[in-house]
Length: 113
Length: 113
Image 1 (cartoon, rainbow over the protein chains, first blue to last red):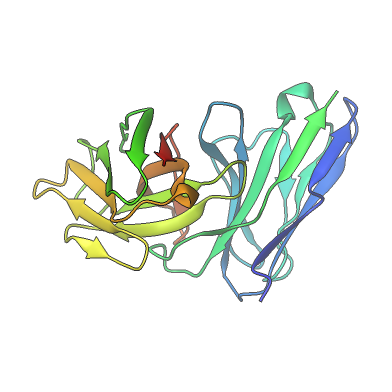
Image 2 (cartoon, rainbow over the protein chains, first blue to last red):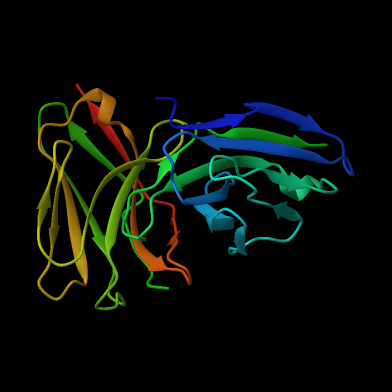
């Protein structure tokens, strides 16, 4: 059972480039979310989804897009990367209702030059 | 969102109990307290959660005060592998049933020989 899988593990982009961070889970979880973690700070919620076809914004959504076409996948798109988006990105999933624990992926370390 | 306050760092001798405190004085009556930990730069790992009663699982115990304004995570026999950043979080239920876990900066627990 793989759990939550994130790819790639590392990525370097130039300012203005676009890319998609992939997240997949094999636990049939309805809820999926993206967090970013900056040095010395906790995790901040970017976007989340409570099921296929449903997404919503978290605390820091600007500069990121998401979609949820299947239960398993929840990609995060950076349309025009900026140095301020240099961070470690974590995807997490859980069952609904909301008192279920979150399972996190191993993270994607992104550097934008 | 209810704010949590934790000491930035703590040390513990291997084999001894580690008691990690957390203040959440603005917690609402239906908000759960969650504990996660993050080892190095891995994805956070769920430890335990509770509402008002004390909870115990295979990893830890959670003691919540009667007024729910503070809690303590207890690792009964800390090992070197328990060295990590421990996050105390008050969960906010999002519209539609998802979780918003606001991670602060946590407590860096160092377990030493």
